[in-house]
Amino acid sequence: MTTDNVGSAWPQAQEGSFLRLGIKAPGEASGRIGLALVALGLVVLFSLLNASFFSLDNFVVIGVNSTSILIAVLGTSALLIAGYVDLSIGSMVALIGIITAKVAVLTGSAVLAVGVGLGLGLLLGLLNGFLVRRLSISPLIVTLAMLALYGGFAFVVSSTAVYGFPPGLLELGRGKIFGIQFTVIIALCVFIIGAFILTSTVTGLRIYAIGGDPRAAELCGIPVGKTVVGLYAANGLLIGLVAVLIAGRLGSITPTIGVRFELDVLTAAILGGVAFSGGAGRPLGIAIGVATIGILNAGLIFVGLQSWWQSIAVGFMLLLALTADQLAIGMRRKRARAATASFSVADPGAALMPAATARTPHEDVPVFAIAGARKSFGAVTALEEAGFTVNKGEIVCLLGDNGAGKSTVVKIISGALQPDAGTMTLEDQPVAFRSPQDARAAGLETVYQDLALCPNLSVSHNMILGREATRRWLGFLPVRDDRKAAEQCRERLAALGVKLRDEDVLVRSLSGGQRQSIAIARSLGEHVKLICLDEPTAALGVKQTAQVMNLIRSIAAQGTGVILVTHDLATVRALADRIVVLSLGRVAYDGPVKQLSADQLWSLMARGRLE
Image (cartoon, rainbow, N blue to C red; front, side, top):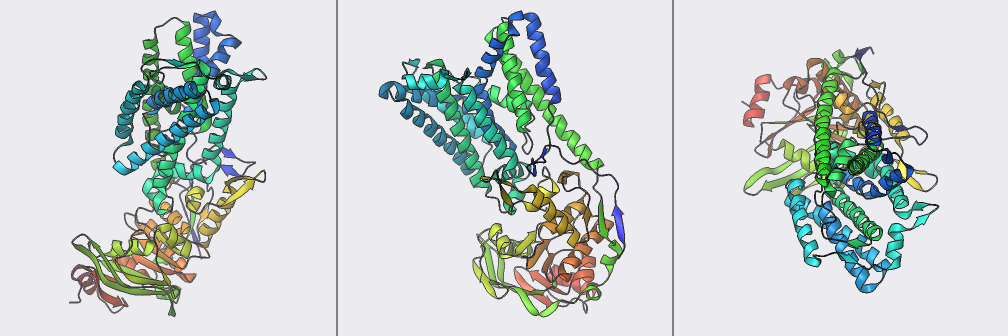
Protein backbone atom coordinates (compact mmCIF):
# COMPACT_ATOMS: atom_id res chain seq x y z
CA MET A 1 0.00 0.00 0.00
CA THR A 2 1.36 3.41 -0.94
CA THR A 3 1.02 6.63 0.97
CA ASP A 4 0.25 10.15 -0.05
CA ASN A 5 1.59 12.95 2.14
CA VAL A 6 -0.97 15.68 2.29
CA GLY A 7 0.53 19.11 2.99
CA SER A 8 3.90 19.98 4.45
CA ALA A 9 3.12 22.90 6.73
CA TRP A 10 2.45 21.87 10.30
CA PRO A 11 0.96 24.40 12.72
CA GLN A 12 2.75 24.95 15.97
CA ALA A 13 1.59 22.91 18.94
CA GLN A 14 -0.18 24.83 21.66
CA GLU A 15 1.83 26.15 24.56
CA GLY A 16 1.19 25.65 28.21
CA SER A 17 2.08 21.98 28.65
CA PHE A 18 2.84 20.77 32.15
CA LEU A 19 5.40 18.23 31.02
CA ARG A 20 6.21 16.78 34.39
CA LEU A 21 2.53 16.25 35.15
CA GLY A 22 1.78 14.92 31.69
CA ILE A 23 -0.94 17.58 31.39
CA LYS A 24 -1.53 19.91 28.48
CA ALA A 25 -3.63 22.95 29.32
CA PRO A 26 -6.76 23.13 27.12
CA GLY A 27 -7.36 25.76 24.50
CA GLU A 28 -5.03 28.20 22.88
CA ALA A 29 -2.24 29.77 24.90
CA SER A 30 -2.86 33.46 25.52
CA GLY A 31 0.58 34.98 25.93
CA ARG A 32 0.43 38.14 28.02
CA ILE A 33 4.05 39.27 27.92
CA GLY A 34 2.94 42.54 26.37
CA LEU A 35 0.43 43.14 29.17
CA ALA A 36 3.10 42.39 31.78
CA LEU A 37 5.29 45.03 30.15
CA VAL A 38 2.36 47.46 30.24
CA ALA A 39 1.97 46.79 33.99
CA LEU A 40 5.67 47.45 34.54
CA GLY A 41 5.37 50.60 32.44
CA LEU A 42 2.51 51.81 34.63
CA VAL A 43 4.64 51.22 37.74
CA VAL A 44 7.44 53.31 36.25
CA LEU A 45 5.03 56.07 35.14
CA PHE A 46 3.26 56.39 38.48
CA SER A 47 6.58 56.22 40.35
CA LEU A 48 7.88 59.15 38.31
CA LEU A 49 4.67 61.12 38.96
CA ASN A 50 4.73 60.32 42.69
CA ALA A 51 7.85 58.92 44.34
CA SER A 52 5.78 57.42 47.18
CA PHE A 53 4.15 54.98 44.74
CA PHE A 54 7.28 52.84 44.46
CA SER A 55 7.37 51.49 48.00
CA LEU A 56 6.91 48.08 49.61
CA ASP A 57 4.02 49.32 51.74
CA ASN A 58 2.16 50.56 48.67
CA PHE A 59 2.59 47.28 46.82
CA VAL A 60 1.33 45.43 49.89
CA VAL A 61 -1.75 47.66 49.91
CA ILE A 62 -2.26 47.05 46.16
CA GLY A 63 -2.03 43.30 46.82
CA VAL A 64 -4.57 43.43 49.65
CA ASN A 65 -6.96 45.61 47.64
CA SER A 66 -6.66 43.23 44.66
CA THR A 67 -7.65 40.13 46.62
CA SER A 68 -11.35 40.64 45.96
CA ILE A 69 -10.77 40.88 42.20
CA LEU A 70 -8.36 37.91 42.28
CA ILE A 71 -11.03 35.70 43.86
CA ALA A 72 -13.96 36.96 41.78
CA VAL A 73 -12.07 36.81 38.48
CA LEU A 74 -11.87 33.03 38.73
CA GLY A 75 -15.63 32.57 38.53
CA THR A 76 -16.01 35.24 35.89
CA SER A 77 -13.19 33.77 33.78
CA ALA A 78 -14.63 30.25 33.97
CA LEU A 79 -18.00 31.57 32.81
CA LEU A 80 -16.42 33.57 29.99
CA ILE A 81 -14.36 30.57 28.86
CA ALA A 82 -17.60 28.55 28.74
CA GLY A 83 -19.22 31.32 26.67
CA TYR A 84 -21.31 32.90 29.47
CA VAL A 85 -21.10 35.97 31.67
CA ASP A 86 -22.51 37.31 34.94
CA LEU A 87 -22.91 41.09 35.14
CA SER A 88 -24.66 40.99 38.52
CA ILE A 89 -21.61 40.27 40.69
CA GLY A 90 -21.25 43.89 41.89
CA SER A 91 -24.80 43.97 43.23
CA MET A 92 -24.35 40.44 44.59
CA VAL A 93 -21.40 41.68 46.66
CA ALA A 94 -23.57 44.50 48.06
CA LEU A 95 -26.59 42.31 48.87
CA ILE A 96 -24.57 39.45 50.36
CA GLY A 97 -22.37 41.90 52.26
CA ILE A 98 -25.32 43.76 53.78
CA ILE A 99 -27.11 40.56 54.84
CA THR A 100 -23.87 39.08 56.22
CA ALA A 101 -23.26 42.27 58.17
CA LYS A 102 -26.80 42.25 59.60
CA VAL A 103 -26.44 38.64 60.71
CA ALA A 104 -23.05 39.35 62.26
CA VAL A 105 -24.37 42.33 64.22
CA LEU A 106 -27.63 40.69 65.34
CA THR A 107 -26.13 37.32 66.37
CA GLY A 108 -22.57 38.25 67.27
CA SER A 109 -21.46 35.01 65.58
CA ALA A 110 -18.70 35.25 63.02
CA VAL A 111 -19.14 31.60 62.02
CA LEU A 112 -22.85 32.07 61.33
CA ALA A 113 -22.17 35.26 59.37
CA VAL A 114 -19.56 33.53 57.20
CA GLY A 115 -21.91 30.58 56.63
CA VAL A 116 -24.75 32.89 55.62
CA GLY A 117 -22.51 34.83 53.25
CA LEU A 118 -21.19 31.73 51.48
CA GLY A 119 -24.58 30.02 51.41
CA LEU A 120 -26.37 33.09 50.07
CA GLY A 121 -23.72 33.49 47.37
CA LEU A 122 -24.21 29.89 46.31
CA LEU A 123 -28.01 30.31 46.16
CA LEU A 124 -27.83 33.54 44.16
CA GLY A 125 -25.39 31.92 41.74
CA LEU A 126 -27.71 28.94 41.33
CA LEU A 127 -30.61 31.30 40.67
CA ASN A 128 -28.64 33.14 37.99
CA GLY A 129 -27.62 29.88 36.33
CA PHE A 130 -31.14 28.49 36.44
CA LEU A 131 -32.60 31.65 34.89
CA VAL A 132 -29.95 31.80 32.15
CA ARG A 133 -30.63 28.19 31.14
CA ARG A 134 -34.38 28.31 31.67
CA LEU A 135 -35.07 31.57 29.85
CA SER A 136 -32.78 30.61 26.95
CA ILE A 137 -31.88 34.23 26.23
CA SER A 138 -28.58 36.06 26.37
CA PRO A 139 -26.91 35.85 29.80
CA LEU A 140 -26.05 39.52 29.34
CA ILE A 141 -29.74 40.42 29.53
CA VAL A 142 -30.58 38.02 32.36
CA THR A 143 -27.70 39.03 34.62
CA LEU A 144 -28.16 42.72 33.81
CA ALA A 145 -31.70 42.38 35.17
CA MET A 146 -30.33 40.61 38.26
CA LEU A 147 -27.79 43.41 38.68
CA ALA A 148 -30.63 45.88 39.14
CA LEU A 149 -32.66 43.46 41.26
CA TYR A 150 -29.88 42.58 43.72
CA GLY A 151 -28.78 46.21 43.95
CA GLY A 152 -32.30 47.31 44.86
CA PHE A 153 -32.68 44.57 47.47
CA ALA A 154 -29.40 45.67 49.08
CA PHE A 155 -30.97 49.08 49.80
CA VAL A 156 -34.15 47.40 51.01
CA VAL A 157 -32.17 45.45 53.62
CA SER A 158 -30.31 48.58 54.76
CA SER A 159 -29.99 52.00 53.21
CA THR A 160 -27.20 52.98 55.62
CA ALA A 161 -23.86 51.50 56.62
CA VAL A 162 -23.84 48.45 58.90
CA TYR A 163 -20.97 48.08 61.40
CA GLY A 164 -20.16 46.68 64.82
CA PHE A 165 -19.01 43.22 63.71
CA PRO A 166 -17.83 40.51 66.11
CA PRO A 167 -14.04 40.18 66.59
CA GLY A 168 -13.89 36.86 64.72
CA LEU A 169 -15.13 38.41 61.48
CA LEU A 170 -12.75 41.36 61.82
CA GLU A 171 -9.87 38.98 62.48
CA LEU A 172 -10.68 37.07 59.30
CA GLY A 173 -10.47 40.27 57.25
CA ARG A 174 -7.57 41.98 59.04
CA GLY A 175 -5.60 39.26 60.78
CA LYS A 176 -2.11 38.23 59.72
CA ILE A 177 0.13 35.20 59.85
CA PHE A 178 3.88 35.62 59.36
CA GLY A 179 3.13 39.23 58.43
CA ILE A 180 0.77 38.28 55.58
CA GLN A 181 -2.93 39.08 55.80
CA PHE A 182 -5.39 36.20 55.87
CA THR A 183 -7.24 37.73 52.92
CA VAL A 184 -4.12 37.53 50.74
CA ILE A 185 -3.45 33.92 51.73
CA ILE A 186 -7.08 32.95 51.08
CA ALA A 187 -7.11 34.71 47.71
CA LEU A 188 -3.89 33.03 46.58
CA CYS A 189 -5.10 29.59 47.69
CA VAL A 190 -8.45 30.02 45.93
CA PHE A 191 -6.74 31.22 42.74
CA ILE A 192 -4.24 28.34 42.70
CA ILE A 193 -6.99 25.77 43.25
CA GLY A 194 -9.14 27.38 40.55
CA ALA A 195 -6.21 27.50 38.11
CA PHE A 196 -5.54 23.81 38.78
CA ILE A 197 -9.17 22.90 38.09
CA LEU A 198 -9.26 24.90 34.85
CA THR A 199 -6.05 23.55 33.37
CA SER A 200 -5.61 20.05 34.77
CA THR A 201 -8.95 18.38 35.43
CA VAL A 202 -11.71 16.82 33.38
CA THR A 203 -14.06 19.61 34.48
CA GLY A 204 -11.65 22.24 33.17
CA LEU A 205 -11.39 20.57 29.77
CA ARG A 206 -15.18 20.41 29.52
CA ILE A 207 -15.50 24.10 30.36
CA TYR A 208 -13.20 24.96 27.45
CA ALA A 209 -15.10 22.53 25.21
CA ILE A 210 -18.44 24.20 25.99
CA GLY A 211 -16.94 27.59 25.14
CA GLY A 212 -15.56 26.23 21.87
CA ASP A 213 -18.78 24.60 20.66
CA PRO A 214 -21.57 23.80 23.16
CA ARG A 215 -23.46 21.57 20.72
CA ALA A 216 -20.35 19.53 19.94
CA ALA A 217 -19.67 19.20 23.67
CA GLU A 218 -23.22 17.99 24.29
CA LEU A 219 -23.03 15.44 21.48
CA CYS A 220 -19.84 14.13 23.06
CA GLY A 221 -21.80 13.36 26.22
CA ILE A 222 -20.96 16.44 28.29
CA PRO A 223 -23.91 17.64 30.43
CA VAL A 224 -23.73 21.23 29.21
CA GLY A 225 -26.76 22.51 31.14
CA LYS A 226 -25.66 21.09 34.48
CA THR A 227 -22.09 22.28 33.95
CA VAL A 228 -23.18 25.84 33.17
CA VAL A 229 -25.51 26.01 36.18
CA GLY A 230 -22.66 24.61 38.29
CA LEU A 231 -20.35 27.36 37.03
CA TYR A 232 -22.85 30.04 38.02
CA ALA A 233 -23.21 28.42 41.45
CA ALA A 234 -19.43 28.32 41.92
CA ASN A 235 -19.22 31.94 40.80
CA GLY A 236 -21.85 32.88 43.38
CA LEU A 237 -19.93 31.03 46.10
CA LEU A 238 -16.79 32.97 45.24
CA ILE A 239 -18.71 36.26 45.34
CA GLY A 240 -20.06 35.25 48.75
CA LEU A 241 -16.47 34.75 49.92
CA VAL A 242 -15.51 38.15 48.51
CA ALA A 243 -18.38 39.83 50.40
CA VAL A 244 -17.42 38.15 53.68
CA LEU A 245 -13.75 39.15 53.36
CA ILE A 246 -14.64 42.74 52.42
CA ALA A 247 -16.89 43.01 55.48
CA GLY A 248 -14.14 41.73 57.76
CA ARG A 249 -11.47 43.94 56.20
CA LEU A 250 -13.44 47.20 56.15
CA GLY A 251 -15.39 46.71 59.37
CA SER A 252 -18.52 48.10 57.77
CA ILE A 253 -20.71 47.53 54.72
CA THR A 254 -22.80 49.97 52.69
CA PRO A 255 -25.32 49.08 49.94
CA THR A 256 -23.03 50.81 47.41
CA ILE A 257 -20.00 48.63 48.19
CA GLY A 258 -20.12 46.73 44.87
CA VAL A 259 -20.37 49.70 42.51
CA ARG A 260 -18.08 49.22 39.48
CA PHE A 261 -16.84 45.89 40.86
CA GLU A 262 -18.11 43.89 37.88
CA LEU A 263 -16.33 46.30 35.52
CA ASP A 264 -12.99 45.79 37.27
CA VAL A 265 -13.38 42.01 37.29
CA LEU A 266 -14.44 41.76 33.64
CA THR A 267 -11.62 44.07 32.57
CA ALA A 268 -9.05 42.02 34.49
CA ALA A 269 -10.29 38.79 32.92
CA ILE A 270 -10.39 40.08 29.34
CA LEU A 271 -7.09 41.93 29.73
CA GLY A 272 -5.68 38.62 30.93
CA GLY A 273 -6.56 36.92 27.65
CA VAL A 274 -9.96 35.39 28.41
CA ALA A 275 -11.95 35.55 25.19
CA PHE A 276 -15.35 37.20 25.60
CA SER A 277 -16.61 34.86 22.87
CA GLY A 278 -15.51 31.86 24.93
CA GLY A 279 -13.05 28.99 24.66
CA ALA A 280 -9.76 30.71 25.51
CA GLY A 281 -7.88 32.04 28.51
CA ARG A 282 -5.15 30.95 30.92
CA PRO A 283 -4.70 31.58 34.67
CA LEU A 284 -1.27 33.21 34.30
CA GLY A 285 -2.63 35.82 31.93
CA ILE A 286 -5.61 36.37 34.24
CA ALA A 287 -3.27 37.02 37.19
CA ILE A 288 -1.36 39.58 35.10
CA GLY A 289 -4.68 41.24 34.22
CA VAL A 290 -5.60 41.51 37.91
CA ALA A 291 -2.20 43.02 38.72
CA THR A 292 -2.60 45.55 35.89
CA ILE A 293 -5.99 46.71 37.16
CA GLY A 294 -4.68 46.96 40.74
CA ILE A 295 -1.69 49.06 39.67
CA LEU A 296 -3.87 51.29 37.48
CA ASN A 297 -6.43 52.00 40.19
CA ALA A 298 -3.78 52.67 42.85
CA GLY A 299 -1.72 54.84 40.52
CA LEU A 300 -4.64 57.09 39.61
CA ILE A 301 -5.27 57.68 43.31
CA PHE A 302 -1.60 58.49 43.92
CA VAL A 303 -1.50 61.12 41.19
CA GLY A 304 -4.55 62.80 42.74
CA LEU A 305 -7.17 62.20 40.05
CA GLN A 306 -10.84 62.08 40.93
CA SER A 307 -12.64 58.72 41.22
CA TRP A 308 -14.42 59.15 37.91
CA TRP A 309 -11.05 59.04 36.14
CA GLN A 310 -10.68 55.50 37.47
CA SER A 311 -13.93 54.57 35.73
CA ILE A 312 -12.76 56.26 32.54
CA ALA A 313 -9.39 54.50 32.64
CA VAL A 314 -10.88 51.06 33.39
CA GLY A 315 -13.54 51.49 30.71
CA PHE A 316 -10.88 52.50 28.21
CA MET A 317 -8.77 49.47 29.14
CA LEU A 318 -11.82 47.23 28.70
CA LEU A 319 -12.45 48.62 25.21
CA LEU A 320 -8.80 48.04 24.31
CA ALA A 321 -9.00 44.48 25.63
CA LEU A 322 -12.17 43.73 23.66
CA THR A 323 -10.59 45.17 20.51
CA ALA A 324 -7.48 43.06 21.05
CA ASP A 325 -9.74 40.04 21.61
CA GLN A 326 -11.45 40.54 18.26
CA LEU A 327 -8.13 41.10 16.51
CA ALA A 328 -6.84 37.87 18.05
CA ILE A 329 -9.89 35.99 16.74
CA GLY A 330 -9.24 37.36 13.26
CA MET A 331 -5.58 36.35 13.42
CA ARG A 332 -6.49 32.84 14.57
CA ARG A 333 -8.90 32.43 11.67
CA LYS A 334 -6.27 33.70 9.25
CA ARG A 335 -3.69 31.25 10.59
CA ALA A 336 -6.24 28.44 10.44
CA ARG A 337 -6.88 29.15 6.75
CA ALA A 338 -3.17 29.34 5.98
CA ALA A 339 -1.99 26.36 8.02
CA THR A 340 -2.62 22.71 7.28
CA ALA A 341 -1.55 19.64 9.23
CA SER A 342 0.54 16.82 7.76
CA PHE A 343 -1.26 13.53 7.50
CA SER A 344 -0.05 10.38 5.83
CA VAL A 345 -3.13 8.61 4.54
CA ALA A 346 -3.67 5.40 2.60
CA ASP A 347 -3.64 6.02 -1.15
CA PRO A 348 -6.82 7.96 -2.05
CA GLY A 349 -7.14 6.10 -5.29
CA ALA A 350 -7.88 2.93 -3.36
CA ALA A 351 -11.11 4.47 -2.12
CA LEU A 352 -12.51 4.47 -5.62
CA MET A 353 -12.41 0.67 -5.87
CA PRO A 354 -15.67 -1.25 -5.36
CA ALA A 355 -16.19 -2.08 -1.70
CA ALA A 356 -16.67 -5.80 -2.37
CA THR A 357 -13.10 -6.15 -3.62
CA ALA A 358 -11.67 -4.76 -0.36
CA ARG A 359 -13.58 -6.79 2.23
CA THR A 360 -16.46 -9.17 2.77
CA PRO A 361 -19.17 -8.29 5.34
CA HIS A 362 -20.38 -10.92 7.76
CA GLU A 363 -23.82 -11.34 6.24
CA ASP A 364 -24.94 -13.87 8.85
CA VAL A 365 -23.81 -11.89 11.91
CA PRO A 366 -26.25 -9.04 12.70
CA VAL A 367 -24.77 -6.36 14.92
CA PHE A 368 -27.65 -3.85 15.07
CA ALA A 369 -31.36 -3.73 14.31
CA ILE A 370 -34.06 -1.10 14.64
CA ALA A 371 -37.71 -2.05 14.16
CA GLY A 372 -41.06 -0.25 14.23
CA ALA A 373 -39.48 3.13 14.93
CA ARG A 374 -41.98 5.96 15.13
CA LYS A 375 -41.42 9.62 15.93
CA SER A 376 -43.76 12.59 15.67
CA PHE A 377 -43.18 16.28 16.26
CA GLY A 378 -46.61 17.66 17.01
CA ALA A 379 -48.80 16.97 14.00
CA VAL A 380 -45.80 16.07 11.81
CA THR A 381 -44.85 12.39 11.61
CA ALA A 382 -41.12 12.11 10.91
CA LEU A 383 -40.88 8.32 11.18
CA GLU A 384 -43.52 5.65 10.79
CA GLU A 385 -42.71 1.96 11.33
CA ALA A 386 -39.13 2.35 10.10
CA GLY A 387 -36.68 -0.48 10.55
CA PHE A 388 -33.58 -2.18 9.13
CA THR A 389 -30.56 -4.23 10.24
CA VAL A 390 -26.79 -3.89 9.95
CA ASN A 391 -24.43 -6.86 9.90
CA LYS A 392 -20.92 -7.04 11.26
CA GLY A 393 -18.48 -5.37 8.88
CA GLU A 394 -21.32 -4.24 6.60
CA ILE A 395 -21.67 -0.72 5.14
CA VAL A 396 -25.35 0.23 4.90
CA CYS A 397 -26.06 3.50 3.10
CA LEU A 398 -29.14 5.33 4.41
CA LEU A 399 -30.68 7.33 1.58
CA GLY A 400 -33.68 9.54 1.00
CA ASP A 401 -34.80 13.00 0.05
CA ASN A 402 -34.78 15.92 2.48
CA GLY A 403 -37.45 15.32 5.10
CA ALA A 404 -37.48 11.56 4.49
CA GLY A 405 -36.54 10.84 8.11
CA LYS A 406 -32.81 10.09 7.84
CA SER A 407 -31.71 12.61 10.45
CA THR A 408 -34.45 11.47 12.82
CA VAL A 409 -33.29 7.86 12.53
CA VAL A 410 -29.68 8.87 13.16
CA LYS A 411 -30.64 10.92 16.22
CA ILE A 412 -32.68 8.02 17.63
CA ILE A 413 -29.86 5.56 17.06
CA SER A 414 -27.33 7.95 18.65
CA GLY A 415 -29.50 8.66 21.70
CA ALA A 416 -30.06 12.33 20.85
CA LEU A 417 -33.81 11.62 20.39
CA GLN A 418 -36.10 9.09 22.02
CA PRO A 419 -38.61 7.35 19.71
CA ASP A 420 -42.34 7.34 20.41
CA ALA A 421 -42.39 3.61 19.63
CA GLY A 422 -40.09 0.91 18.33
CA THR A 423 -37.20 -1.24 19.51
CA MET A 424 -33.47 -1.45 18.97
CA THR A 425 -31.05 -4.32 19.53
CA LEU A 426 -27.26 -4.27 19.64
CA GLU A 427 -25.68 -7.70 19.23
CA ASP A 428 -29.07 -9.27 19.92
CA GLN A 429 -29.44 -7.36 23.19
CA PRO A 430 -32.31 -4.83 23.52
CA VAL A 431 -31.07 -1.27 24.05
CA ALA A 432 -32.71 2.09 24.75
CA PHE A 433 -30.56 5.21 24.84
CA ARG A 434 -31.53 8.29 26.84
CA SER A 435 -28.51 10.33 25.71
CA PRO A 436 -25.52 10.18 23.35
CA GLN A 437 -23.43 9.19 26.35
CA ASP A 438 -25.58 6.07 26.82
CA ALA A 439 -25.11 5.11 23.17
CA ARG A 440 -21.35 5.63 23.33
CA ALA A 441 -21.09 3.53 26.48
CA ALA A 442 -22.97 0.70 24.75
CA GLY A 443 -20.56 0.73 21.80
CA LEU A 444 -22.47 2.85 19.29
CA GLU A 445 -20.67 5.92 17.95
CA THR A 446 -21.97 8.70 15.71
CA VAL A 447 -19.98 11.07 13.50
CA TYR A 448 -22.29 14.01 12.86
CA GLN A 449 -22.36 16.12 9.72
CA ASP A 450 -20.88 19.08 11.59
CA LEU A 451 -18.34 16.64 13.11
CA ALA A 452 -19.03 17.70 16.73
CA LEU A 453 -15.45 18.88 17.17
CA CYS A 454 -14.40 21.79 19.38
CA PRO A 455 -12.12 23.98 17.23
CA ASN A 456 -10.40 25.57 20.24
CA LEU A 457 -9.16 22.22 21.57
CA SER A 458 -6.26 20.10 20.40
CA VAL A 459 -6.63 16.90 18.39
CA SER A 460 -5.90 14.72 21.42
CA HIS A 461 -8.32 16.61 23.67
CA ASN A 462 -11.08 16.31 21.06
CA MET A 463 -10.31 12.62 20.77
CA ILE A 464 -11.01 11.93 24.46
CA LEU A 465 -13.78 14.46 25.05
CA GLY A 466 -16.59 12.83 27.02
CA ARG A 467 -14.43 9.80 27.86
CA GLU A 468 -11.48 11.43 29.56
CA ALA A 469 -8.93 9.18 31.25
CA THR A 470 -7.74 10.27 34.69
CA ARG A 471 -4.95 9.43 37.09
CA ARG A 472 -3.96 10.40 40.61
CA TRP A 473 -1.34 13.08 41.06
CA LEU A 474 0.50 12.91 44.40
CA GLY A 475 -1.59 9.84 45.09
CA PHE A 476 -4.90 11.62 45.69
CA LEU A 477 -5.52 14.53 43.28
CA PRO A 478 -7.50 13.42 40.18
CA VAL A 479 -6.04 14.94 37.00
CA ARG A 480 -6.51 14.27 33.28
CA ASP A 481 -4.15 11.71 31.86
CA ASP A 482 -3.15 13.63 28.73
CA ARG A 483 -0.22 11.33 28.02
CA LYS A 484 -2.60 8.42 27.70
CA ALA A 485 -4.88 10.59 25.56
CA ALA A 486 -1.99 11.32 23.18
CA GLU A 487 -1.16 7.62 22.92
CA GLN A 488 -4.79 6.72 22.19
CA CYS A 489 -4.94 9.49 19.60
CA ARG A 490 -1.94 8.15 17.70
CA GLU A 491 -3.16 4.55 17.94
CA ARG A 492 -6.64 5.30 16.61
CA LEU A 493 -5.38 7.37 13.72
CA ALA A 494 -2.77 4.72 12.89
CA ALA A 495 -5.53 2.09 12.80
CA LEU A 496 -7.05 4.05 9.91
CA GLY A 497 -3.72 4.43 8.12
CA VAL A 498 -3.37 8.04 9.27
CA LYS A 499 -0.09 9.31 10.70
CA LEU A 500 -0.20 12.50 12.74
CA ARG A 501 3.04 14.30 13.54
CA ASP A 502 1.69 16.33 16.43
CA GLU A 503 -1.52 15.62 18.33
CA ASP A 504 -1.36 18.94 20.19
CA VAL A 505 -2.31 21.18 17.25
CA LEU A 506 -5.68 22.87 17.53
CA VAL A 507 -8.50 21.48 15.40
CA ARG A 508 -9.18 24.92 13.91
CA SER A 509 -5.84 24.58 12.10
CA LEU A 510 -6.91 21.44 10.21
CA SER A 511 -8.54 21.15 6.81
CA GLY A 512 -12.02 19.71 6.31
CA GLY A 513 -10.80 16.27 5.35
CA GLN A 514 -8.39 16.15 8.26
CA ARG A 515 -11.13 17.13 10.70
CA GLN A 516 -13.28 14.38 9.27
CA SER A 517 -10.45 11.92 9.90
CA ILE A 518 -10.25 13.07 13.53
CA ALA A 519 -14.01 12.75 14.01
CA ILE A 520 -14.00 9.24 12.57
CA ALA A 521 -10.91 8.17 14.51
CA ARG A 522 -12.52 9.41 17.73
CA SER A 523 -15.35 6.97 17.20
CA LEU A 524 -12.99 3.99 17.07
CA GLY A 525 -12.21 1.62 19.90
CA GLU A 526 -12.31 -2.04 20.82
CA HIS A 527 -15.76 -1.61 22.36
CA VAL A 528 -17.30 0.02 19.25
CA LYS A 529 -19.78 -2.22 17.44
CA LEU A 530 -21.55 0.25 15.15
CA ILE A 531 -20.64 3.63 13.68
CA CYS A 532 -23.17 6.07 12.22
CA LEU A 533 -21.71 8.56 9.71
CA ASP A 534 -23.90 11.51 8.76
CA GLU A 535 -22.87 13.03 5.40
CA PRO A 536 -19.13 12.49 6.00
CA THR A 537 -18.11 13.72 2.53
CA ALA A 538 -20.34 16.80 2.38
CA ALA A 539 -18.47 19.96 1.32
CA LEU A 540 -15.17 18.09 0.81
CA GLY A 541 -12.92 18.20 -2.24
CA VAL A 542 -12.13 15.20 -4.43
CA LYS A 543 -8.92 14.22 -2.62
CA GLN A 544 -10.43 14.72 0.84
CA THR A 545 -13.51 12.70 -0.15
CA ALA A 546 -11.28 9.88 -1.31
CA GLN A 547 -9.43 9.91 2.02
CA VAL A 548 -12.65 9.70 4.01
CA MET A 549 -13.99 6.89 1.83
CA ASN A 550 -10.82 4.95 2.45
CA LEU A 551 -11.22 5.49 6.21
CA ILE A 552 -14.78 4.15 6.08
CA ARG A 553 -13.64 1.05 4.26
CA SER A 554 -10.90 0.53 6.87
CA ILE A 555 -13.47 0.67 9.68
CA ALA A 556 -15.71 -1.92 8.05
CA ALA A 557 -12.72 -4.16 7.30
CA GLN A 558 -12.13 -4.37 11.06
CA GLY A 559 -15.61 -5.89 11.51
CA THR A 560 -17.45 -2.77 12.68
CA GLY A 561 -20.93 -2.15 11.28
CA VAL A 562 -21.33 1.16 9.43
CA ILE A 563 -24.45 3.24 8.75
CA LEU A 564 -23.62 5.88 6.16
CA VAL A 565 -26.01 8.76 5.46
CA THR A 566 -25.19 10.39 2.13
CA HIS A 567 -26.65 11.99 -0.99
CA ASP A 568 -23.57 11.26 -3.11
CA LEU A 569 -24.36 8.40 -5.48
CA ALA A 570 -20.67 7.92 -6.35
CA THR A 571 -19.97 7.28 -2.69
CA VAL A 572 -22.94 4.89 -2.50
CA ARG A 573 -21.70 2.83 -5.45
CA ALA A 574 -18.12 2.77 -4.18
CA LEU A 575 -18.92 1.78 -0.58
CA ALA A 576 -22.40 0.36 -0.06
CA ASP A 577 -22.96 -3.34 0.58
CA ARG A 578 -26.66 -2.55 0.94
CA ILE A 579 -28.87 0.53 0.80
CA VAL A 580 -31.92 1.51 2.86
CA VAL A 581 -34.08 4.21 1.26
CA LEU A 582 -36.48 6.23 3.42
CA SER A 583 -39.49 8.06 2.01
CA LEU A 584 -41.91 10.04 4.19
CA GLY A 585 -40.73 8.22 7.29
CA ARG A 586 -41.07 4.71 5.87
CA VAL A 587 -38.55 2.26 4.42
CA ALA A 588 -39.17 2.27 0.65
CA TYR A 589 -36.30 -0.03 -0.30
CA ASP A 590 -33.89 -2.33 1.56
CA GLY A 591 -31.50 -4.30 -0.59
CA PRO A 592 -28.35 -4.36 -2.73
CA VAL A 593 -27.39 -1.46 -4.94
CA LYS A 594 -25.52 -3.30 -7.72
CA GLN A 595 -28.54 -4.12 -9.88
CA LEU A 596 -29.94 -0.57 -9.66
CA SER A 597 -29.22 1.97 -12.38
CA ALA A 598 -28.47 5.60 -11.60
CA ASP A 599 -31.99 6.59 -12.71
CA GLN A 600 -33.52 4.00 -10.41
CA LEU A 601 -31.44 5.25 -7.49
CA TRP A 602 -32.56 8.81 -8.10
CA SER A 603 -36.16 7.66 -8.38
CA LEU A 604 -35.94 5.83 -5.06
CA MET A 605 -34.38 8.83 -3.31
CA ALA A 606 -36.73 11.43 -4.83
CA ARG A 607 -40.03 9.52 -5.07
CA GLY A 608 -39.58 6.53 -2.78
CA ARG A 609 -40.29 4.00 -5.54
CA LEU A 610 -38.65 2.33 -8.51
CA GLU A 611 -39.60 3.50 -11.98
